[in-house]
Image 1 (cartoon, rainbow, N blue to C red):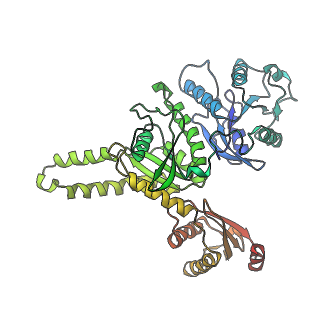
Image 2 (image 1 turned 120 degrees about the horizontal axis):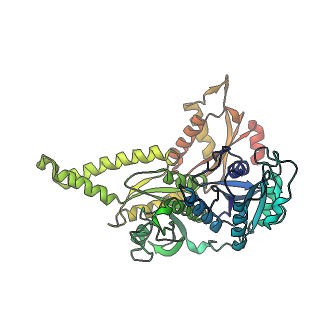
Image 3 (image 1 turned 180 degrees about the horizontal axis):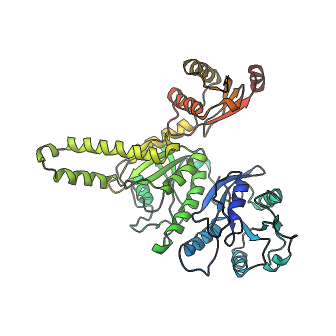
Length: 471
């Protein structure tokens, strides 16, 4: 089930990013007391009284400004509003309503979507001004994003307006969908073309123009006797100047697709890995989804290498498929290092080189998709897990922290998809991130968790208490 999307909107410098940070309980957005700090859109999961949603921070809305990045920011805001299930409209409690506030209020009214009206910075305002009632959105919720005043009431109100779980979601999945594979990535990396290569027919619209796919497209088929549903996603591009808005829109569509998927295929361009790839891949990782990184358009690299061989001075050494394969292998090794450097949090994800145009890499991707899905659902028996952890600690004891050493007394795996391990330890504060990383790597080596993220959760407990808790 896709998580609902909550978009925070408003004119520049009303504290949207500060509110975003407060609701996500993490300092994610850049906050500064000058207009226009938020350029690119930010998104993160937020737990609102037990309900997980995707929270989206938007830039300052100013449709009257036609210069610089402002038009793109306005377009992105409209995309966010279009995708959102609930909209949080933020104004500055210290100021009288401005023309921009009225413009935003008018825009929100015609969407017929649930709107939570928020007056921020009330800590700096004298009292609670009533002037914002003129916007026709009812009484605002007065908050201070910086100090946390009124945020609990805001969370309650958002939660009330979110669509009920399992209802009103056109993208609800069923068991008949089989293995759900989301193909995600930035615009024009060849997602639709690769979908067609998998299907073996022109079931999806493919175009040289970036952004042909306007929405997520589900296509069900059978692969070697197994039911599969491909979720092809992309952005919408109507004009070249809305490039940044398009990429933001594609991310929002990818969020929904990733939430619905069993396996995520992150497609990157053979030309290189960029920040947008990391953003989409990071969301898949945080969502606990198995990931396969597919480097598309590798045929272009092959052509470049072949051309270089033809132009080489020593034609006798340059000729032949053997030399071409050697150079391609070296190029793949180099590119894999680049992928690992830019996407270190996905170091568990296999990297496959493919060409949608030449229809190469299709079987490898599909075989890997079934494999990583199996790994994501793998459960380790408790007895094997604890025997393994005893061996790991004997072979590589945890480092000491202020003279104390971590002791893992007991462990169990209560969840799958992703595999989640609860470790009962003497003191969770003694777990160094490097040792947690070591445990994760050893778990992968011993039990085979290729392609899937792992979760380690620590609980303070004595050995006796740990065993009693698990009985």
